[in-house]
Image (cartoon, rainbow, N blue to C red; front, side, top):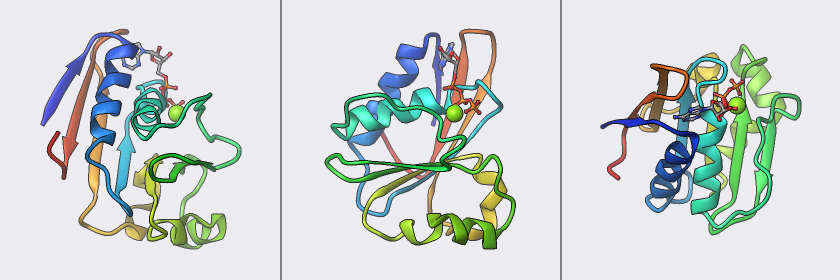
Length: 139
Ligand SMILES: Nc1ncnc2c1ncn2[C@@H]1O[C@H](COP(=O)(O)OP(=O)(O)OP(=O)(O)O)[C@@H](O)[C@H]1O
Ligand SMILES: [Mg+2]
């Protein structure tokens, strides 16, 4: 499915809607250039899981954990480049720990991820417009 959003709020709302379909061990590979809106979408997912408060890119912490209807593990793989490194961050075992994993820059650890996951790609069309392609789940 392809969606077009024209504000950050619309992207957040899409994330909130998506969250309603998520189950234990759902994995979302979330890709798009710097500033595409990956964290905005993740904030929507968090809200949809009942998580309040600040959601920011886990750029330095690599993994942020939140308690919601399901635990949310928000990962930023920008600086990770191998399966070994992914394992060292603790991210690998979180994939099957019963929570929801949202993985920014998932292309860096593609070989560590199962085939059957949700793939989301955000393209920047204009400063405000985004094309968001969601594969592997129906909204
Ligand atoms: N339609 C839109 N959807 C999402 N964000 C938008 C949209 N229009 C403008 N923006 C702005 O784009 C920026 C997206 O930032 P965000 O931190 O979510 O990007 P990111 O993909 O996580 O980047 P990074 O790779 O640096 O973590 C925000 O400043 C947001 O307000
Ligand atoms: Mg981000």
